Every structure is written in C-alpha cells, then in structure tokens.
Length: 458
Image (cartoon, rainbow, N blue to C red; front, side, top):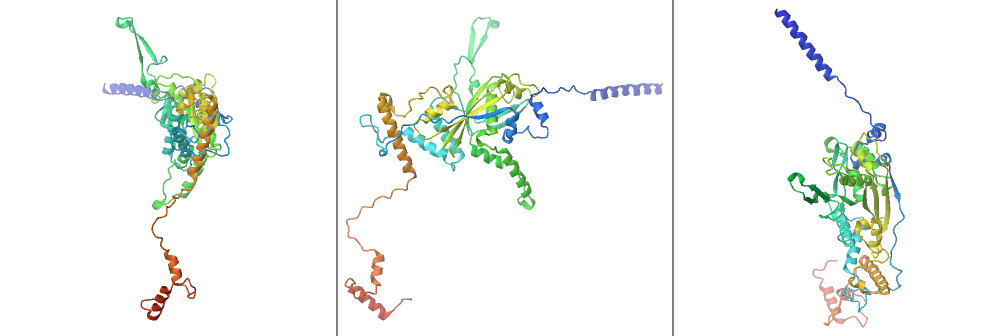
C-alpha cells in the first residue's frame, strides 16, 4: 500500500512540474511596430546609437525625425535715418522739449546699449550674458513675458529623462488666474444643488514655456567636456581614450551652427509641457499643435537669431506611443531669422516682428520707440529729429567707451618754480666751464671734491 501511495504522489508531482514548465515557456505575443513609428526607426538603424540623451543627439536625429531648418531674410527694418556729419555732444544734464533734445540720451537707451555690449562680447561669462538677455527683453517688452525654470524633462514612451534639456533662460506668458480657457465648470446636481462652481488652477500656467534662450558657446563647451576620461596609471593622462573622446565630441557639434539639433530637442521638450498635465508622470496627455520660439546670439555678426517652429500634435503622439505611426503630418519646419542689434533705435520693432505680436504684444512697426516720456507730445517732424539726435549721441557714447582715458589737466601752482633735478645734475657735471651760463658756485664745489676725493667710488 505504501508503495502504491508513493507512486501516486510521484505522478502528481510530475504533473504539477509539467504545468509549471508550460507556464514558464509560454511565449508572449509579439506585436510588430507600425511603419513610421519611433520603434520602426530605431529598428532600421539598430547599429547606430539613437536612443541617447538630447545632449548627444547628432544631425542624423534631425533627418530621421523629419525636421528641417529654413533661413529667412534678416530683419533689418526699421532703422534710423542717416545722420549728419557732425554729431552732437553728449550731455548728462536733463533736457526738456523746450530746450531741445539734441545730445540727450534716455537712461533706458543707455542701459540697453550697455546690455548689448555685454551680450555681444565673446569673453562675457555665461551667467552674466544670460542676465543681460533677461534684462534686455524686460526693457524692450515690459510685462509681456514671465521667467520660468530653464530646465525641462523630455519624455519618450514610458521613459523620461529628467533634466534632459537645459537652457540659460526660459519665459512663459504671464499667469492669468481668471481665464476663459482655464475655467473648469462642474455641476453640483449630485450634491443637491443646481448652481455651478468655476475654478481656475494656477498650476496650469506655472511651466508652459513659449520662449527660451540658448547660449551656443556654452553648449559646445559642454559637448567637449561631457564625457568622462578615466586616468591612466599613477593618475597620468590617458591619451588614447582622450583622443577617442575628442573625436566623439566633434561628431556632436553640427556643421552649421545655426541649425543645431539641440534646438529641435529643446522645442520638443517645451511642447511636451503644453501637451501633458505632468511630463514626469505622463498623465493627462492631450496632443495639440504648439508654437514655440527660441533665441540665440551670434557675436560674429552682432545679431540675435530667432527660431520659430510649430510642433504638430502627430509628432507629440509619436513620442507618447512609440509603436504607433503618426496620424497626420508629423514633419517639423523651424524657421530662423537674424535681427541686427545695432542701431539701438528700432531694435524693439525689429525683434518684435521676428518674435511675433502674439508673444510680445502690440507695437507700431512704422514708428520707432525712442523711450522718451514726452515723445507723444511731439509732432512727426520733431520725432524724426529726436531719433537722429538720439542715434548720434549713442554713436558718440559708444566711441567714448572704447577711446583712451582722458588725462586730467594739471593747474600750475602759484608758488616759485623749482628746477628739475635732472637738469641740475646735467649742469653740475658739465665740462664746459668757460661758458657764461656755468655757475661759479658749482665750480668751486667741484674743485673741493677733486682735491679731497673722500668717499667717492669710481
């Protein structure tokens, strides 16, 4: 009986093991990604490292994602009229309309000129340049932009890269608590009442960036130093690895600096802030077309480059569902335009036309802002004269900044003039003793020294 029971137990255990084995070896159903999805793109370029942080993107990412850059003609108008040959003298005394405006420069114009000098200087540090850019936009377009945190995560499917995009400055539209688009209407019929409750969540406006500033010099510096090079024996420089990392860093720098692939990654991260309720958690995804802008500075040609692009809803859906093909046109077109910073007068209108009135507000593109309080009381002819005077004064002010320091004039003293020591020594040791200008007192002292020669070393 015991042998029979043991056989039954062995057979039962064998059946249980077989069931467990069948459960373990059961294969999952493989779903192939749709053609055109991100998974399909990664599969086609399996030997290339594409799933990398945005800082390590290359020009291949721009091509595979269907992005192209289009250069627009530079925004050169409006500019002041040509100046006269003799510029007026700059005066620091306040002027009034009755006294005339010649030679006067408003403090706002001087401050903008100083900020532009610092921004266009190649040796200016990164924090100083970013601070100057923030101050410049606040003076040109006051109350239109609000600063926000310049570090954004970027999401790709279930994964998110925290701090994947880092800029030097970022702005959003000012917070409006009572906005029609943000009002949430809830019915209170379930609570026994018929009234409605309207509420606006201020968190919806906290991080919806619309404009970013990117320092190209700092970006290329980070690319060159982002890879860690392990030291060699006894802490020496590992030259072979160092050379390999230099080659790897050079591949990250684009051939055309104006068409940097990191600009595309920045715009994608900015657009995801508008499409998600929370990018880190990936909740409340509502794709929509998002227009974003980005600023860079080109100190080679003294201009500000404005990038404008629309991230389509189909493109944002590609990054949300990696195995799904985009439903609609997912191509991105980024247009960039140069805005010369000089002359200062007209910069607000030139930069405003490049950024757009929907971002910086309304302005008159035909009449340049002179930042003079009484300018509204002037006639059109007086306004043109004021623009010429301000531009002439600014030109002289810039020339005086780069000129040599002025040596103050020394007022002669009314006291008796004393002879210079070098002239006295030259005369005292002169050999022309027969000249009438040679003093007899010095000759007598010379003879005494020749006779004694005490304490004199040749």
